[in-house]
Image 1 (tube, rainbow, N blue to C red):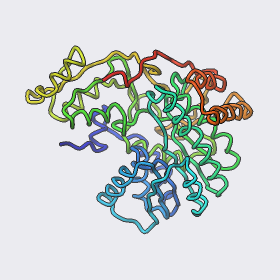
Image 2: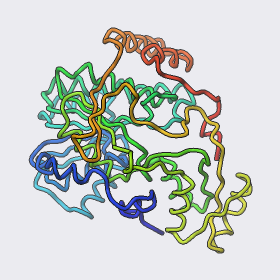
Image 3: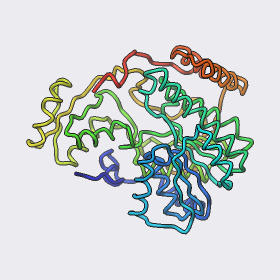
Image 4: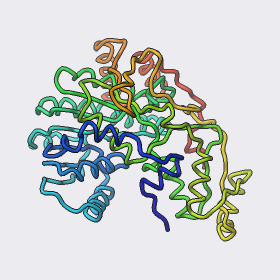
Length: 399
């Protein structure tokens, strides 16, 4: 019915030029990629897949990709073969869970990689809606990162990169807080392996995102729904891949990369993007007064060149009106890169505090008993700035 390549995504999010390209070229990242070996964990998601494709284009010596989604991995290979083709280097994909003993065997038997990039994450704020998904989020976002770092440092990997989020800055939800603790966990290994991370804005139309749901709603003939009072920063998947690769290959040890937002990355409302998205498809927004009205009108409005939309009030747990990438206490170097700021990863606490946190998590998991309030309080012990915003209403309770 339609396609959304990166150039079209850029126009829909209200920009004309890609960020990070000049830094990518100036620091000669393509040469750093060429003839290097890579393991990409979570490489079949939107950001991971975009990064895998960018690495592939520059002919690495080894490119191995791990993900638990076999369908997305198959599509990634088809996409690469159909758009780029082949390389002389060793390109393989594996359906493996990094939390499993299978991953341990895999990493033990592989030759050492130059770079490991970890994109595996539970990224939805809604993941704290129940205690089971919440613990899985903690497992993936924190514990599996520590596990892969231990393996990477023991195998002589040169650099390890993983993705953080803008929501880790002054977090108000468990997802953002888990990513902030992930950042802290990286510091445990800085004397054993070079580590870097980047706080991301929203990657437009990435898997599972609200904008991705726009595509699914169109394909299924259903209404679009978006909040009226939320502003976000957006980048394209291609830009996300550049930011990751610049951070991974050129950063100094234990650094946090953030995009420059002043004059380069405007705050944009979901309503603006919805309108541009529908206009791109030849439709106009038709604002409905209720979810029921939107569902009822969705089948008939397209014939009139309109699409049913419902604008909701933000009333769910853990949502900010707008995101931020750094705090007032962070010392940001804005001069090294054109489109990126850099600061040192920092933690006001100590390693004993982190070890206590991990020990208590292990105790909860062994006894197979935990509550959300216990986990929130445990997070607050290590993150005094964590101001959990609880409404007892979650996105799964809305259309």
